[in-house]
Length: 260
Image (cartoon, rainbow, N blue to C red; front, side, top):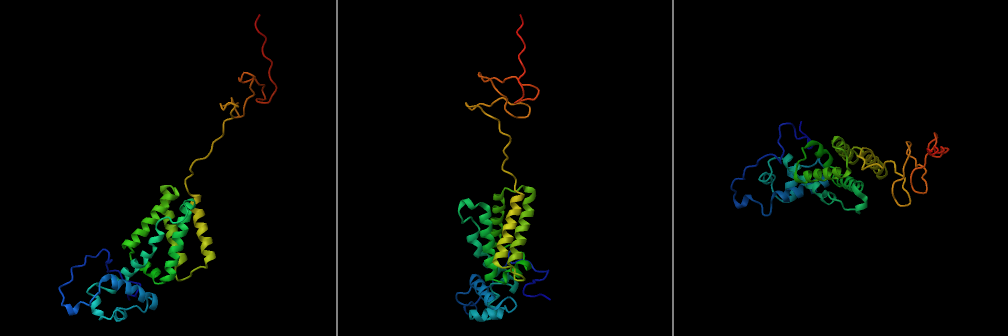
């Protein structure tokens, strides 16, 4: 049985299907001001107020003041309309797709902003979570959100080998912590988000590590060093003084007498 959130297996996405031009209609058959955008916006409002299980084309048509059959001039099936409504709701994430915080926050701040925006979307539209799991979710707003996530992960500096795993972790976090089955309190959500960010940072390629420093003299030039890397004592002329077997700091071996 196909449920409101289960389109079945034989259906093509509305974003992939090629819809033929509508046949010519009499003026009386074309409700004034009715188009796909208006129908989609009304569907979003109905889903918000009635929920996914009570959504129907008949209820939607009644709210628009038209017959149910009038809607099918613009969409082929109810599932097509639900896909359109889903992508329309995802368009509310547009403001979260680019960095909005201070530059010092970097990608962790952008990820926190994106995650909180997505969580807020699922709170405002509880029907989005089940539809996201039911449909391909490849509309223009969904693709824009996916591209923003790719740009964010590029900014982390993660090696290519770990980028796919990080994207999966972020996606699972967004859907898991924002879904309607169990929505954790804000405190738990923020803690889980911090753990996710820390995990990404732990796998981020290092930007460079400082190696051992070379001792320098008063003029800024490198001092001579011994085998262990420590500075060798120098004489008044700046040349290395001979040292004993103990190395730097050991007793100085007496110089050999000059040949007669």
